Image (cartoon, rainbow, N blue to C red; front, side, top):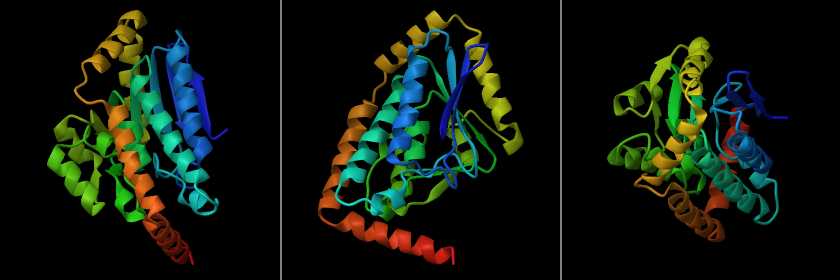
Length: 252
C-alpha cells in the first residue's frame, strides 16, 4: 500500500507516503493519507504522528496525469475532495503532527505541511505552490502559515520556490538537517511530545485549534471554488495539457 502507518511502542505513529516516482498523489492516494491520520486521531495509543515520505521528495501535489487521462470532471472533483480531506485530517488530528520534509514539497504537499503542528526539513527541501502554472488555485491558505503575507503572495503569483533554510527565520520550520538525519530529527521532537501525558497534549491540540485566528478548512474550500471556475472556463485543461506535454518532451 503506498501510504503506510506504523505505531511504535513509545506512542509515536509514523505515516509514510510512497508514491513513486515523485509522490504526486492520485485521488485515492489523498484519501489514504486522510484515512491514516483519522485512524491515528481515534487511537488513544497514538501520542504523536510523524508524517514523512520515501523517495525523491516529500510531495509533488496532485497527479496531473490521472486528471488528464480521466474523462469529465470526476478526477478533478475527487482530487479536490481528497486534498480537502487530507489537509483537514492533518489539522484536526487529535494529536500533534510533525511533518518531516525531504526534497520538494509542492502544491498539495504545502497543504499537508502548512496544517502540521511542527515542521523539520532536510537541507535539500524546498516549498512552492505552482498552482498558477496548472490553472488551479489552492494551498495559499497553508503557505500563509509558513511565510509572511507578502512573501506568500510573491511565491504564489510567480510560482517560485523557497528553500527550507529560509523558513527557519520565520519560525515555521523548526530546524534543517542533513538528509540522512531527517528521520532522527523528527523522531527527537516526536519523542519529547510522546513522553507527555497524552490526555493533556490532546486537550492542548484542541485548545490551540480553537484559538487559531484562521479557519483553514473554510479558507481552503473558498480557494477551491476558483479552481472549479477555471476548469469550467477551459483554462485549466489547456494549461495541464501544456504541462503534461512539456514533461513528456523533457523525458525524451
